[in-house]
Image 1: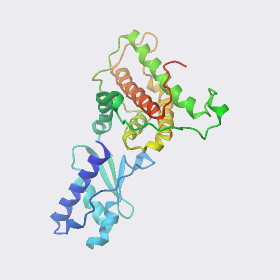
Image 2: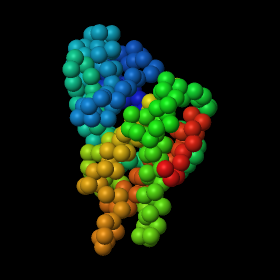
Image 3: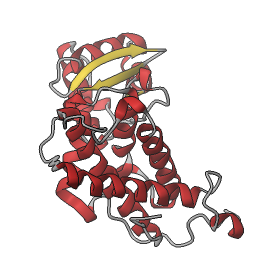
Image 4: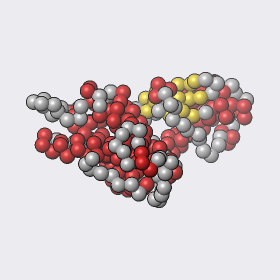
Length: 257
């Protein structure tokens, strides 16, 4: 579910909540604010709609937040919703909804998140540093992430692995959740923030890749498991978004480094 669709869902729920209590729904704004909490424990998305709306309809914002959270929690795509603070609603989406971004990326391919070219990326990085293959060089970190995941996908061939349709619900590790969460932000990112976004995605990828519990490919004589296929499928989505983002910046996406 993209943010625009979720915002519409929240607004529709708010209309019902107000109507059920005989309150005026015409005061609802046309657009609903959404943000992604920095701490995943606070939800995948959060809205301050009750805080903005409470005083207009003469209802305490925290009560409105509780009513709205209860209504949203009944939705198929929302795992849980909770009122928080003076009038916030934190939303946790279902695993199926979160991982739906992978299918969206697979379907769109090179056109996923397409934007006009953004010249001059990473110009603030020292010219000498940009040439060095070190972790302090964000250009290297992003391009290496692409090369690293390309190598994994290529090596999967010798195992006869076909990730098509793999069950992404098997991806339960926190680092896998982080990768999926960051993937889901790509379409929202402003063109002038693509470089910063790619740095975040690369960091998430490297952290996941380096986790022994999250091996993408079988080790030694280990049999290919459903979890391997799910991770390989996620890897393909990461590779696509990295490639698309680097294309936007006019920076090459190497398959080997």
